[in-house]
Length: 221
Figure (cartoon, rainbow, N blue to C red):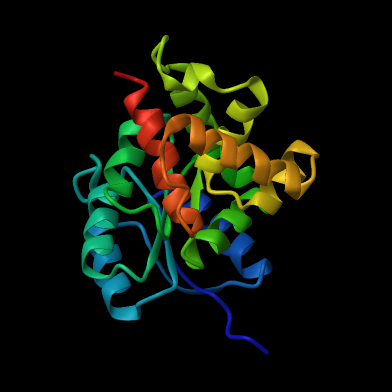
C-alpha cells in the first residue's frame, strides 16, 4: 500500500480547522500536525516536512497576512512541500505573491471551496503532487479584468474557457471532463491558445499554469 500523503493544517478558526482535518482524514490523508498560529505552523512544517500544508492567509500572532507570509517563507526554505492557502476574500495579489516565479506545488482557494469536498481534496492532492490549484473565482475575475485590445481578445470563447481551466491547474484530462469534450479537443485548443499568445506551453503542468497566469496578470494593466 502506498504511503499516505502527509498534511499540516494551519487555521485559527478551531471549528473550521477540525472540519478540514476530518475531511482530509476521511479522504485518506495523514494529518501529521495542526495549529492556529502562523509562527507555530512554520516551525512544525519545517520539523515535520509534510507533503503539503493547508494554510489560512490571516492568522495570529499578528492577525494580518501572517499565514501567507509563513507560507511564502516555507516555499523558500522547503520548496518540496506543497502549499495550499485559504482566503476568506478574493484577492488575486495573494495568489501572485504566493506563486512568485514557480506555480509548482502551490494552490490558492477561497474558504468557501472547502465545502465542495471532492474539489477541495482534489486540490490538496494535486498540490501535494507538485501540481497547481487556483480557485476558479480568482481565475475568472482575472480573465474578466483583462485589458481590451490585448492578445487575449484573439482567443475564441471556448479557448478562453480552456485557458481558465488551465490556469486553475487542471490537466488536459481534467479540462476535458469539466468541459465535456475529448482530450484530443483540449490538446488542440491548448496548442492554439499558446500559439496565439506566443508562449511556450512547456512540458509540465505547472509551467503551463505559470504561462497562463503571466498573461492573466499582464491583462490587468
